[in-house]
Image (cartoon, rainbow, N blue to C red):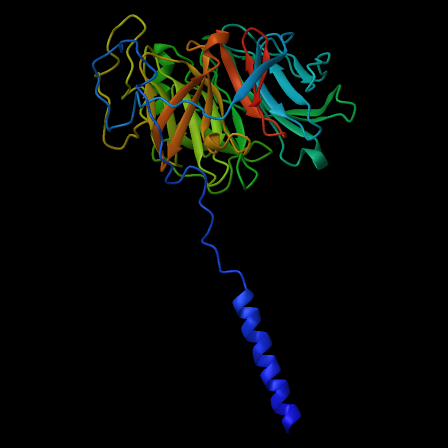
Amino acid sequence: MANKYTLSFACFCLLFFSYCDKPKQQPPAQKPNENITLELGDPVETLPANTNYKPAFTGQTRVGSLVTKTKYQHKIITSQLSSPWGIAPLPNGKFLVTEKGGNMRMVTEEGAVSAPISGIPAVNSAGQGGLLGLLVDPSFGSNRMVYWAFSENATGGTTTAIAKGKLSEDETTMTNVVVIYRANSAHSSSLHFGARIVMDVSRNLLICLGERSSMSTRVLAQSVASSWGKIIRINLDGAAAAGNPTFAGAGALPELYSIGHRNPQGLAIHPENGELWLGEFGPRGGDEINFIEPGKNHGWPVITYGIEYGGQTIGDGIQQKVGMEQPVYYWDPSVSPSGMTFYKGNKIPEWQNNLFVGALSGTHIVRLHIQNRKVLGEERLLRSENQRFRDITQGLNGALYAVTDAGRLYKIDKE
């Protein structure tokens, strides 16, 4: 009996002291950028606006400026590219790059540029056309698939097409190439083709398409029977993806995801919550960053914060209308936002989940601190380089990489 009670007491002591020694449960880790106190200066934009239009809400334009505190550096990896348009990292640390004129190349971290990859369909590179956005399949390590957008000749002018192919093991040839989608009309305009590509969690493709710029085609951004001025969502074979929103109206296309866009050249998915974000050129002023939800109308050309290049009012000169979405952020004067990406690295803590956008006429890289779908601060990086930044991505090493119209590839990383 004594042995029984002794054993019970010993077990009790063991459990008690084990509990006392157990580390106390810690509160859940704070997600990056939540409840961060920002040190904001005056707005980075100091030039006068083109209009006297008023924002729909505080913080929709000209928010306070940010300055990155962590020391970072940039360097030119190569200057030997020809009008690069899109860049995407590969699992082996190299980069796949599209050049506007029609070539696709490999670039190493050390700056070695390959010969053109064979097997790429011919493009029409007049004006804003050419070999445009690209996407390396997240499962590239097993399937070696690549998707890209380009402008091609078609009956009646040119159109935007989407192709896919398999990169050969020796990285010299794109094999089994097939065009999986074409915008449903052509036009003689050489402007506003789009086009960036991202893949959602269900492995469907989201692609932004411009409205081709002319007065006769810009109105098609509001037509549900037209591909122009839209984000479309298709499967990997080019058919409308399952679960797309249904738009009311005669001849509504099943691939439509959102409508009412002008000249979108930036598309990115938030790394934590999967939200879709879009950057698009306004006319003279009114460049936009938009949060995209399926089935929404973003208003062009009915509402806009810009004016015609000649100074005339667009349409009724209104900036808000029931049933049409407001941009999360806009610029006036324009910065010309092109390719963009969310920073998901941890080398520069204050950049986590920030949106980085290549600016063409602005000749800098935009950094936007976004929280709860609202821009809280803006910074302009690499302004002294005086480059038209066309696209930006994040490498596997956590650094940012940006290409410019002048043929440069920059690496931006912590010192």
